[in-house]
Image 1 (cartoon, rainbow, N blue to C red):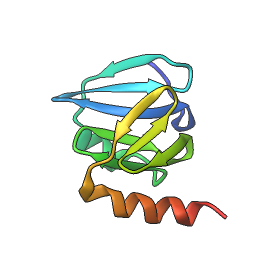
Image 2: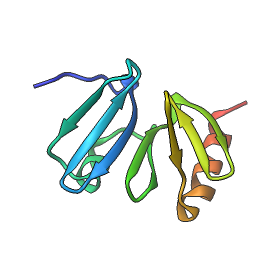
Image 3: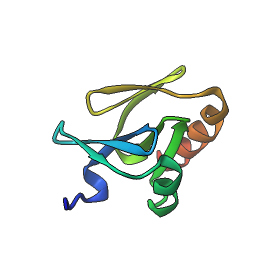
Length: 94
């Protein structure tokens, strides 16, 4: 059992029935849960940006074209999620 705070999570990567959680401390944790089940229990600052990735919007360092950087990871943003991500990020910034 491991306790992680939401603000410590950068990226969640789907691996079939497992997820790989990347933290702000540059650590990876594996959990037996699907991305679909997990996204339903996460707060609104988490967004699915690809079939295999969920990101913490508060921890995104940069977003350009179809790539975002969160922590030390580059994540490809799928075309179907790009507009929603752009609109959400614009609402979060001044």
